[in-house]
Image 1 (cartoon, rainbow, N blue to C red):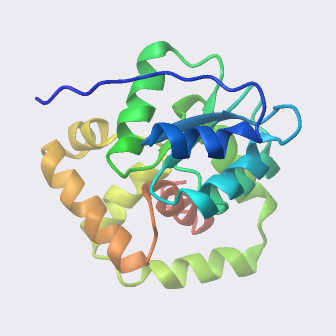
Image 2 (image 1 turned 30 degrees about the horizontal axis):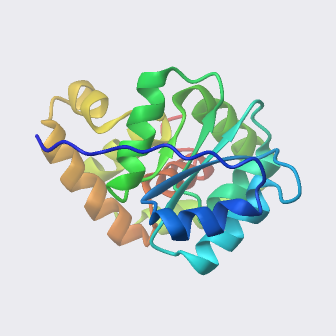
Length: 195
């Protein structure tokens, strides 16, 4: 296992985040949604525009569907609640640094359920059509993503190694043209997979 150096630099205003990320050559930035002068979601857009190789995780106190959607569609690598345990925060940072997405397990079910309940039949039909390219086993793995399970937890559930699940996830993302596992999980829920 390789070790990594982690440095923390704090900024008090959202407007300072892009400049600080450039200066520090940050791999991962954690942004609070509520920041003075420039909120975290606006800072996210600026970070994505000016330092596109920097991955951004959004922090918040409350899960609000609109903010989660703006964050994920705006280029965020993940979404965490401020009361997340330190170990979860480190998992999220490592996932983001590795190019993966991370949605806090405590927020996943709420967000996915909110999105699914707010969408009409048309969205569900579109999602089901997109899933037609997947094999039965890929659909099974996708359903577990929709539950917010990690690769290790999904592997235990379906008696596969974590590496095999990771391979399936990569195939699923490619076939569905999703950028990350959060988008795939939302698609699974839209289609009613696993419900």
